[in-house]
Image (cartoon, rainbow, N blue to C red; front, side, top):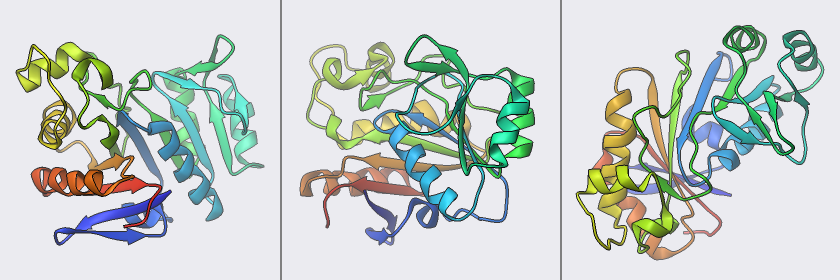
Length: 243
C-alpha cells in the first residue's frame, strides 16, 4: 500500500499510516473507521504498524467484522482478552456471530479493554463491501471515547452509477438530489463525506478522510479535487501505484 497526505495542494508520500496520521505513540488512542471502501484493510495496516512499535492493539467493532484469517479471536471474556494483550501485540475481540463474523462487545467489556490496550481500532460502520456510502439516521455507531475518526471512501466509485457502487442509496440520492441515473463525480464524494460524516461529527474528535484505490492518474487527480473541496479537513490517499 502506498500512502500520501494532501499538503500545500499536492499529495506528499509517507512511509506509514502512523506517520501520515501523526499518531502519538506514547498516548492511548481509539481510532474508529467509518464510511466505505477499505475500512478493514486500513485498520489491519494500522494494527501491523502500531504493533511493530510495541503497541498493544485491540481490534473490535460496533457493527459486524469478518473474522480474519490470521490473528487471535476471543469472545466477550474480558479476563482472557486482557491476558492475551499481555502476551500478543494484536488481539481481535467481539461476540461470535455465525461462522465468519463477530459483533460488538458489551459496553462494560469494551470499557475494560480500552484501559488494557495501548490503541483500540474500531470498525464502526458497515458498507456491504461497496466503495461509497452515506449513513442512515442510526449510523454510524461511533464509540464516545473515539479520539480520531477515519472517514473512508473508494475512488473506484467514480464514473459508476449510484445503484452500482453505493450503500444506502436512498441517502446518497437525497444528499445528491439525484433520483434518476447518476454517475458518481469527485464533487459527489466530497459532498457525501461532508454531509454524511464530517459535519455531524464536527467537534467530537479529530477527523481524517482516507481516499482509497488511487490506482490511476485520473483517480489521483480526482483525490486532489476532493481534498480541495474538503479543506481544511486532513485527507490521505492510498493506492498500489506510484505517482
